[in-house]
Length: 214
Image 1 (spheres, rainbow, N blue to C red):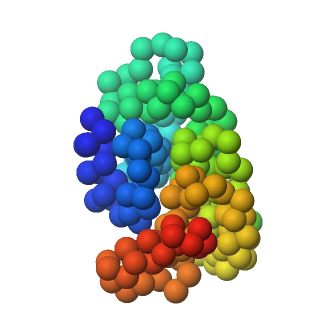
Image 2 (cartoon, one colour):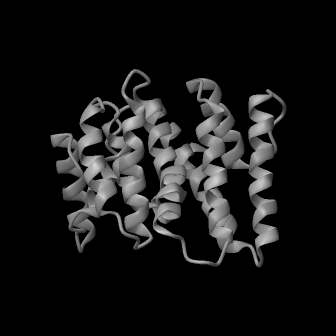
């Protein structure tokens, strides 16, 4: 199952997949990739639903998955749901950031353009929370909250929304992350003068990890 999720993230989320290659421990790498797969499933809800109501139903489905996981009930047979249940148990992940990731996707069901404040809240609750969870998995003792700004900056960049102030905050915040936790945010370096080639991306992320800066 973990290989299937790794292949999925390599296809749909190559930036974060590249960052995850710098996680030396295979189990930790697989656990981080599972968080990214969960984020991908939530991101699909607004995109594949033909109307907002169906999008809400898909997001509610994932909230019910969290109910099953945290109430220690049988988890429905879905590869990401079952993998997430294992990661939550193994890493003792809290529910709050996982639920915030669901809440963040509701704004995408509204066709109206996001205000600047809404965009920042959306970015922090989606990729920002993903980065926080990834950092927690990699080093629970690190200042995992400092990963949120980097994840948010990357999300804003990917959605072509203003990200300059958030990136500036992220550059300062990630200095508090331990080297072990840094791969959770290394992809955010791509928001600063984005490389034009795949090789350029690999080099940029490699240098980011080596220097501990984005």
